[in-house]
Amino acid sequence: MSSPTPLLPPELECAIFTLAAELDPPLCTVLILVARRVFVWIEPLLYQRIDFTSESASQALINAAKEKPTLLESGVRRLVIRLKPSIDTTELITVALPACRNLTHLCIKHSSDPLPGPDSDYPGLLGTLQHLPIRRLALSINRLLNGPPASPPLDAAAALPHLTHLRISHASPGLLVASTHARTFIAALPSLTHLAIHPTGASRPPSINDWVEQDLPNLRLVLLLRSPVSNFGFPTDVRDPRIVRVTLRAAEGDEARAGRRNLNHWERGEEIVEKRLRLGAASASQWQSTASLSGQLSDLRMELTPNEV
Figure 1 (tube, rainbow, N blue to C red):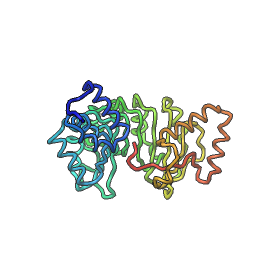
Figure 2 (cartoon, helix red, strand yellow; figure 1 turned 90 degrees about the vertical axis):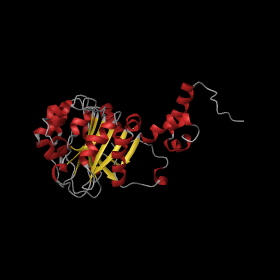
Figure 3 (tube, rainbow, N blue to C red; figure 1 turned 90 degrees about the horizontal axis):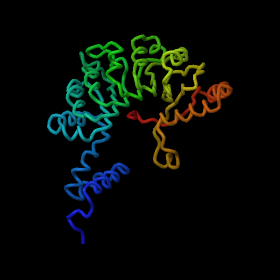
Figure 4 (cartoon, one colour; figure 1 turned 120 degrees about the vertical axis):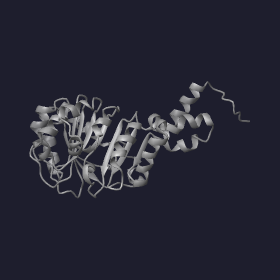
């Protein structure tokens, strides 16, 4: 017969239930029904990774920040939000995000419709992020730096001291390299080790070798991302082994993914860089020519979900 009285020390019981929930997140909805004490432990884990890209969900996040901020503070670690004209962007950034005090991963997406007025950028975003332990960030770099208020690049970098992984959308790597403002910001990020550039324009960029070699010596990986239907062309003269060109493919079903290692784009890119460095400079011409012969100059083809940070 089961007993409502715990048979294990509360600390051990909490650790067991928490570990089970972290290993199998869908199990959270079952575990919270076990007992009141388990509900208290597990409920915050339900909100560790949240996709608030729909309009109703975004408003729910704002409401939760106003009515139950302690839940967001203790639970939310990874968050995806979408900015669109029908959502109060200012409240989302200045009310909802500050409530997620343990947030480490943030992806900000955009509606295809332009945002009106000052909300065309990220009002107050850097002021909010500097108080959060953000380690991974995906967003438009222009909108981040433009504010409002607009931030000097060194001040903007200082506001993100924990950031290690940055995925940015930009018109093209060529324009990014030409932007002193953006280059200074990226180079000044004190903890940055991984950078991904996802162009939104259609152009073949100039070489980014000099920029990576001279301004970004501490980076371990630079990903250039393109969709299979994009008109963006990869650079043909990649010589820095840390630069990996990735062609993204459409999402596959569970059966197609069966048996494939569950590595994200950062981990797959790291494998390629480690292999290049292990083989040494003598192999540079080999991996460069291999990428060129593949048809689209890609070093890697893989599925990437839009919300992955």
